[in-house]
Image (tube, rainbow, N blue to C red):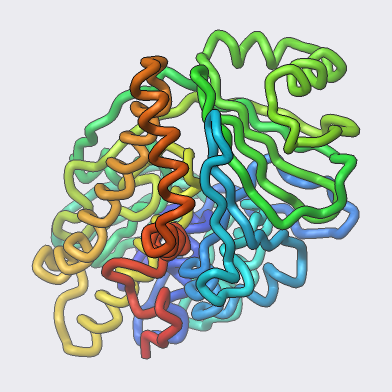
Length: 404
């Protein structure tokens, strides 16, 4: 027996679950396939290593699907200031300058998924298959059948790939990618700090790569240390005491004292962009469509914008009696998102290349640029609005509007 749906979402992580929740209550039958349920939250749990900087636009999307309050009731850390520098004082962005209480929020990835998954279960038009994994995908432009590892079969007019950078759905649909590896890896540390909870996130550029500080709830922080892959492997091999000494030697005085290292991990940096976002009966969102340099923490944010944009297109098309799996309908989603995503990816590439160049004249020029950005108030406000997701071709949910 094959159970038929209007939409199957493969991947119930942050982006996939947000997309599915965006269709909650719509006149569409939706299935979500996720391999592993997120561990439920308990206040005594240690902080997760993987965190995201959630923009104001992303908060609006999470509010729009009814998941924000659940997430906020667990734990998060708002940040109101953001500082960027290299040799000089650089530029500091402040939320009060554009009359917002916050610039964004640092939230553990798992807690975002927990909040969205709990909300997902409240919709009668959505079936969650979890834990479940696709065993076989028979992609056809007019409808796809998915056999799960437990033998169940699902079919749908539209399959949405939210299954990450190595997307099984994207490969089954024959959509290629353009990709390359950056010559950097990132060492990520969760630490306990001597300072109490902070409201600033900062990033200092060095000739070996950026060093970033993200505040977490209480006297905690997430540190991201970008370095050559071989150096990251060396840092990972150090004891906690040796790594603390390395932090004190390399990081700026703004870090303050670190009491102890709570967790650590590393990952290589890669850029990847799907050659198209849609084909007949399939659409890509999040990392399945694009992987971006994490320099400005925009990966999850542009993924959530994908989710909101695709949901908007589908709800509108279905209300108008159109075929939600047709290329003509799905192209509207690609038009909304591909150019904006490419712009963000190109900007991150430019930052990476400009600030990883040791040329002395270029170093002087980029520091002059950061200094000027501090003094040019309108330019600084424009950068803040862009980073907060308040500029560009925004879907309705990101503007705080309903899809209905």
